[in-house]
Every structure is written in C-alpha cells, then in structure tokens.
Image (cartoon, chains in turn yellow, green):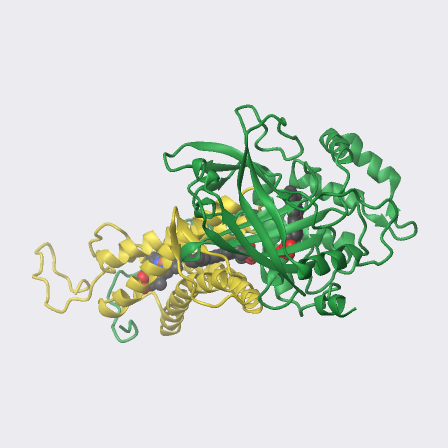
Length: 197
Length: 368
Ligand code: HEM
Ligand code: HEM
Ligand code: HEM
C-alpha cells in the first residue's frame, strides 16, 4: 500500500492493492459523459429560450440525449462490476456517505432524464427523429395530459441535475484546489502514480 | 460496490499555505460563477428583453386573455378528418411518400380562426386556418398549418409579437389604439406592403371555398438528391364565392356552415406545390413569389368527417410546421423555428390545463 515506506525500491505490488484511480474505462466514460451531459443541460436550457435556434438545438438534443441514455446504462453496469478506489483520507465518514449518495443521485438523474425525454416526446404524439430517417419508436401512447406532466418533470429534473452536477464539480475542485488532496487525480485520464507526502 | 468499506490510504492532504487556499477558493468561486451565470444566461433569465418562446406565448395571453385548455392562437376551431391521395406528380421533386402515385394517407385536421379567444364571433375578415397532419407509413408524419391570406404580415417573430401588442384591442373601443398601430406600421414597411397584398385578395364566403397557404418556404429533395425551394397551398375544388357584404348574423356562422357542408358530403382541395427559382425570397413570408412560378398539382385532400374538438382528434395535435417527412426540409425562414418553439409552448400549456369546452359543437349544429 502506498503509505508503506518503500524507499526507492519499487515494492512488488501486493495482490489486493487498492486502486488509486477509477478504472481507465470508468474514467473515459466519466469525462465523455460529463461533456455530453453538461452540453445537454446547456442546450436544453438554451433551446427552450430561443426562437431562432429551437429547431436546430432540439435536433442535437434528441440524439445526444439518447447517447447519454445508452452510455449511462453501460456506466451503471460498469459501476457495479468494477472495483472503486477507496475514498481518500481527507474525507470524513459523513462526507464519504454524502459523496456516494450524490453519485447515486447523479446516476438516477442521468438515466431518468433521457427516459423522461423519450417518454414525453412519445406522449406528445410527435415522431421522435434522431438523424436522417432514423427514428425511435414511441414508448408511451399519445396523451397530452401525460405530456404536460412529463414536460414539467423534464424541466424540474433537468434543473436538479444541473444543481447536483454543479455541487459535484465544486466539491471536487474544493478538494483539489483548496484541500489539495489530489482528488481529481482519481478521475484523471492519465495514469497517476501514488505519492507519499 | 461500496466505497465505505474500504480504508482510505490514498494521498494525504498537504498542509496548504494560506495564499494557496485563498487562490484555490477564488478559482472555485470563479468557476461556480461562470457555470451558474452561463446557465442562467442561456436560459434567458438574465436578459428580460430577449423574446423567448415563453414570452411570446405570454404575449398571446396579454392580448387575448388567458383561456385555460385552449390554443394560445387559433383558439376557436373544429376537428376534421379524411385522407390525401397523391397523384405522383410531387415525386418528381420530393421523395416524401405522401406524394407517391395512388398513395392514400389518412389526415387529421383542424379548421380555426386566428386569435386567442376560443368563442370569438366569426367575421369574414378574421384569418382562417387549416392545420393538417398526414399519417405516412412506418409512423412518419407531415404536419402543416396554413392560412387563407396570400402572404404573412411579418417577416420575423419579433415583428409578429410587436404587431400583436400594437394591435391589441382597447377594451373601451373594441379597436386597436390608432396611435400604437400607426407607430408600429411606421417602423414596419414589410407589414404595410403585405397588408396591401392581403387587401387585394378579399376572403371567400367561408372555410370550404378558401385557399390555404403554407406561406413559409421549405426545400424538397427528390430521389436523385436534387433540391428545390417550395411553398405550398391547398386550393379548393369547391367553387369559390365572395364573402357576404354584411357581417354574419350568428356568431358561429362560418363554423356552422362548414359543419353542415362536411356532414352533407365531402370537401376537397388540391395540393399545389409552387417551385421557387434562385432569387425568390426563402426567408421572408411577407414577400410573394412571382405568379409565373411552376406549379405542381400533387394530389387531392378530401375531408369527409367533422368532430367537436375532443380527446384524440385534431384538438390534441400540435400542428407544428417542422414535423416533416423525409423529402421535405425546412428553409432558413426565421418564422419556422419560432413557430415550432411557440407551438410547443402553447401545446404544453394547454395540455397541462383542464380541457375547455369548444364553442363549435358538431352535434348541436346538426341537431338544430
Ligand atoms: C441527459 C439527458 C437530458 C438532459 C440533461 C436534458 C435536459 C433538458 C433541459 C434542461 C431542458 C429545458 C427544460 C426547460 O427549461 O423547460 C430540456 C428540454 C427538452 N428536452 Fe431534454 N434533456 C435530456 C434528454 C432528452 C431526450 C433524450 C429527449 C428526447 C428524445 C429530450 C427532449 C426534450 C425536449 C423535447 C425538450 C423541450 C421541451 C419544450 O419545448 O418544452 N431531452 N431538456
Ligand atoms: C454532469 C456532469 C458530471 C456527472 C454526471 C458526474 C458524475 C460522476 C459520478 C457518478 C462519479 C462517481 C464515479 C462513477 O461512478 O463514475 C464521479 C466522480 C468524479 N467526478 Fe464527476 N461528474 C460530472 C462532472 C464532473 C466534473 C466537471 C468534474 C471536474 C471537476 C468531475 C470530477 C469528478 C471526480 C474527480 C470524480 C472522482 C471522485 C472520487 O474520487 O470519488 N466530475 N462523477
Ligand atoms: C411567428 C409567427 C407565428 C406565431 C408566433 C404563431 C403562433 C401560433 C400559436 C401559439 C398557435 C397555437 C398552437 C397550438 O397550441 O397548437 C398557432 C396556431 C396556428 N398557426 Fe400560427 N403562428 C405564427 C405564424 C403562422 C403562420 C406563418 C401561419 C400560416 C402559414 C400560421 C398558421 C397557424 C394555424 C393554421 C394555426 C392553428 C393550427 C391548429 O389548428 O392547431 N401561423 N400559431
């Protein structure tokens, strides 16, 4: 383990050494999806406020959102099948619990948001175009009342996801830039050597 | 996997200096400000002067009052259904299946009068609307909302909004404030020109003998990938008659006449595709195209059923002009995206409200 002083001699890695980082696959998924989800939040907020670009932004919003859903399912499976690095010592037990809970909430929102989007377009009775002739089938019957409810949910949960993402990002930055515990390294796309302090 | 169970041997925090703590905090605060500020900015919340779909929908409510459960514009209407039969001529310019020779596409439609008052009294000069949804194979759809004037009065959504408010009826007189209307027209020569063209095309006697124009330009693509600009209209097969000189006696007269004629038989229109040439205005619906443009008669619309607005019929359709099949694409006309956005607003608002009772009741008209 890294806190064991190994001097300059590289210690043979113990068989059960806890990882210092999320797996490479997890890290790539995290950043690809972070970009996609943040883009989705801004595109969503911008398009409902834009007369000129509504159509264009919505044409990007739909396939990108479906992409989030597909990657989100893969990521959920990956989360439960891969080994997570233990939390750093700089985090107390309450903070660890909060971090884990907020991660579950992020999963819940990143998966429910595109599902609600799909459902609401279905309930509006409009064909769901992705690109060119490719369309998704309706998952709900044409029902304006249901559309109105899902449309409200999509807005409320969209804003909730924005808030949670913001808190998540600021918490990581606080750790990294203020507490200086190298929390960001755990998600870095490159390999990070454990350092002793 | 549970992160709680594992001990945490990873990097220890260095003891940060005071300076680096302050710098770190400032960076975090800066990023927070950019993130939240950027989000609020794109959502239009920091720019109250920007015309958004919600503010445009609010404009209808300011102008016409808020009528829960009804469309914010074209609120008074009746649902119809029938079919469209393509004759194959449109396939020369577009791959859209709706144009295929002999293909019969089911159609749901809605006749309406413009304005946001759901029980407004019919007058000959109120703009008449026809919304259509063509159901195509494999769940594809084509939707279009057309009106009976030959050009639109505004070239931009802002113009539409400002005109609506400038021509808002003053309760005391029942007429627009002349000063406001004049001020608007002084700044909008395109509207003045369009109004002159509209004057030259007086309305016909009713819904059945009106020509309905799509007005906005689109693009058609045929099987060899060739693209042409198009505007379309539905031209009545019924003989057109001029509107009566005196105002209708019954406040629902135009609708009542429509209901009884559809009930007695069927009404038909020819779909005319007008093919634009280079230089024709594609992004300004106030400017007509020359009469000499090639016209393609693409098939016949037959409407043979009329229903009171109710669940599942034309009432529940958002006749969004950008729900298009393969083979038809939007042009750069700024009205199109704006219409799509505002119709979605109006549809979401009315769908979330208790349904209103339509002023046009088909069985009452037929029983009378
Ligand atoms: C990660 C996934 C998604 C996120 C974060 C997201 C976010 C948003 C946001 C923030 C809005 C603006 C809400 C408002 O202020 O009214 C919005 C609107 C919308 N979203 Fe999504 N969305 C996602 C997925 C989808 C998907 C998959 C679809 C459809 C296939 C979809 C369809 C829509 C539509 C149609 C609107 C506009 C509704 C209107 O005009 O009122 N979204 N989305
Ligand atoms: C919408 C955007 C984002 C979402 C949905 C998201 C979601 C998540 C989730 C669910 C985890 C837990 C690991 C996993 O299961 O993948 C995580 C970890 C992490 N995220 Fe994000 N994230 C987002 C944006 C960001 C941003 C912008 C940063 C940069 C500051 C960031 C930095 C991190 C770090 C460093 C970790 C590892 C935390 C740890 O050590 O436990 N994330 N993120
Ligand atoms: C920026 C300009 C325009 C705005 C803001 C606007 C706004 C609206 C709104 C809010 C509705 C109600 C939608 C619903 O709840 O389903 C509507 C309906 C309608 N509009 Fe427009 N419109 C515009 C331009 C046009 C043009 C150019 C046409 C004709 C070519 C048109 C024809 C119609 C028709 C026929 C309906 C009734 C459709 C139905 O029965 O649902 N509009 N409009």
